[in-house]
Image 1 (cartoon, rainbow, N blue to C red):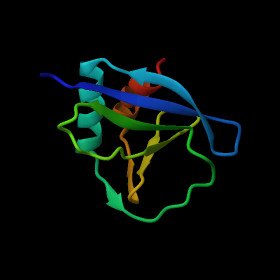
Image 2 (image 1 turned 180 degrees about the horizontal axis):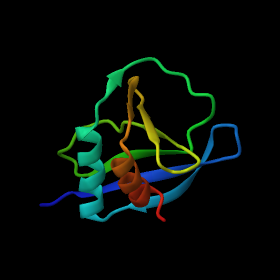
Image 3 (image 1 turned 90 degrees about the vertical axis):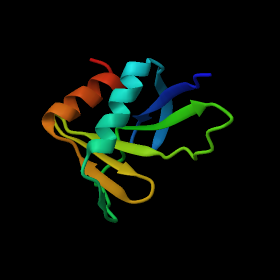
Length: 112
């Protein structure tokens, strides 16, 4: 049995860390691409404070009772030119994606 996988993306509204559901990624190919991009990124274990709220946040969701993983919140900051994407996972793991990976991830999570 193949489990249903999706990514739930929320968008920041206003400046108060308020988020609303923005989009769900259910396409298996896009799900894998996001997962691979994050797994291949150079993550640093740092405590970092950003000057503004994340533009987006997302979690991977698995619909399979055999998978016992907790949802890890990924907070995403996007530069004004959309060429730099910075991601912070809830366990103080930080990465900045390369231009190519940033563009691919942005297109999948946010859309054009």
